Length: 331
Ligand code: ADP
Image 1 (cartoon, rainbow, N blue to C red):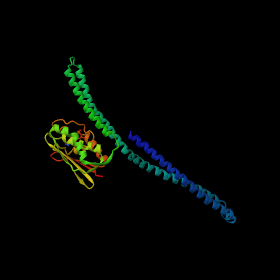
Image 2: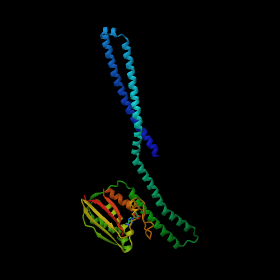
Image 3: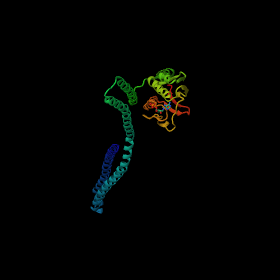
Image 4: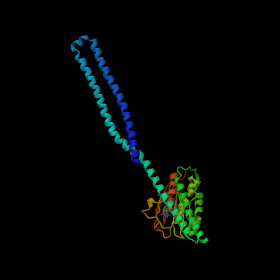
């Protein structure tokens, strides 16, 4: 598809280049032949006004001059055609390279879109397939009990809740250029809201959240920033052992606010670190004993929020857990 588009764009560029060459060549030809005609006309006028001189040199020189003029015009035509062919030939190669370069970002975006759609469909299929097979099995049972029906519904509800989480995540990722209400915010209030969102999950695992942030200002969209820190805190809890603690701290650095989320969990493999912000990437699937729920979308959303705020986000595995560092503008 992109090969054909490249060729079509190259043809368009070459056609434009040819039109420009033709325009200049025709004008150059007209100007130069007019100059030659004017030169010959002056010579003929001179000969007519000086009959003695005309008698002396004869008619041959007039014919000779006219033949030379025709030859000069032919030489101009050949010269221009020759130069145009070289320009169009070399320009054609340049046009092809330029067309490839022009279409490259579109191809990258297109490939990413195709991958995203394929990944999303794959993830959506799993819960749907589970629901379908459970319903089929239950329907095949001749004596379905109320308890059996309840069990099926509970399981279906679980899968539906997974689908809801997944579709919400996909929607957040797909919303491009969403309007952000950028303003000065209190970091303390943002972190408090983020902690509030995850406190139930932390309580379930007996994990304490140690809030060591200092209350300075951060510039950005409040709702997005709350979501960003809720994702990091939720991950810290999800990938931590029961009874451990998660620490969130902050500092100031040259007009930037630096916020750290540290846990004492399973850590992240060094090889996986470069990919954890990619959509649908899950690093620890085989590492943690219990299966941790998720679709690999949280950090991709976090990264998108940070990029929209022109901030930075980095991940480290500390040997005793993981650490995520976010840099945001203070103003
Ligand atoms: P999810 O948690 O839904 O799988 P994320 O995009 O939030 O998706 O994270 C991507 C992957 O990065 C996770 O699957 C996990 O392997 C790894 N990860 C993220 N945060 C942590 C953490 N605090 N500790 C260990 N691994 C983490």
